[in-house]
Length: 226
Length: 191
View (cartoon, each protein chain N blue to C red):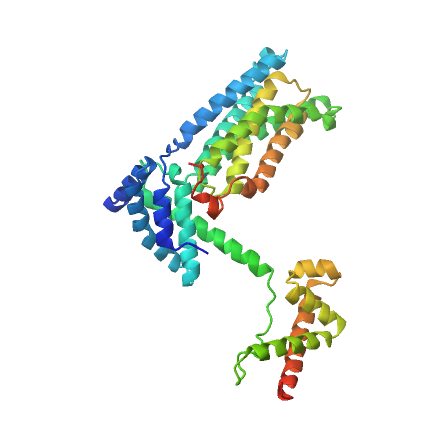
């Protein structure tokens, strides 16, 4: 039988335990990015940085592309953390759209230039599953950490929060991958890197209500989500 | 935007104390916000049992999400966001339930009877109803059995029979009309 509201209030007050208030979204982003950065640095060290990295870093388009991917990841993370705080504006989610657009636009521009120079689509671009695997490996720990951190907040917009969280993790994972996994053309990056990142964000968004939800009534009283 | 009223500041301080584990402050806070939450929900036109159910949902959500309150920000927008979210969840739940319901005409064979129902009569009516269902054409009988007796949704019944949702609705409507007719004839016969 359902408890009356006064009884529920007394019960909640009786069970209240100290909780650590969540840090502000930008501070949580900094913590998340630091841990994810350490993981990716370790991954790059284990896999060895790509041979042509020094040379590629002299290309403005490559630098802009990587910077945009980094900012996309950070902006998406900050937006994801903001969406689990009641009272924050949802328009914050738009933060990540500008760097995401820049990232995809620079990769697309590179692909168009390559096509214009070669006059044909680069061979073998269709089957670069290694990119998907390495992005998944790079995004795995940041995604796991993101999930744990998001679950400490309020699941107000589970689809949006999960999609932004996955965009952040996959965006940063992609950046790490680009530093140790060489690819032969920008078309590969466009299809397999950008495509994988967007697909992961879409999948996480679809699974959002299952990943982030209010605990059931019976469990809410004794929830350790605090 | 972040201008805070004294009331808002006081409630924020109570929640801040509750975050530190102060049960008295938490009790006071919950007692103060409950009527406000109830008023917010009542404005949506919900009826009493639903309102209390939703008030309790909001209180539990406040409890679960209390770590997400930033003492440097206003309290009431934080609370209002949770109320809006739980109202939206409830609206989605109703929409899902409504999608599985079949709208049919009310059966007035029970409540408009001049003679009140008795246990004996209820048993007799159940038998009469079973007989009346058996007397229905096969399509209508299947629709009633699946949708009313087995409580399948329209989609599930359509998948089970291979009949379209529209056809099932029509069959159900006709079956209900036929049952009403059959049962009222039996009533007139002295049952």
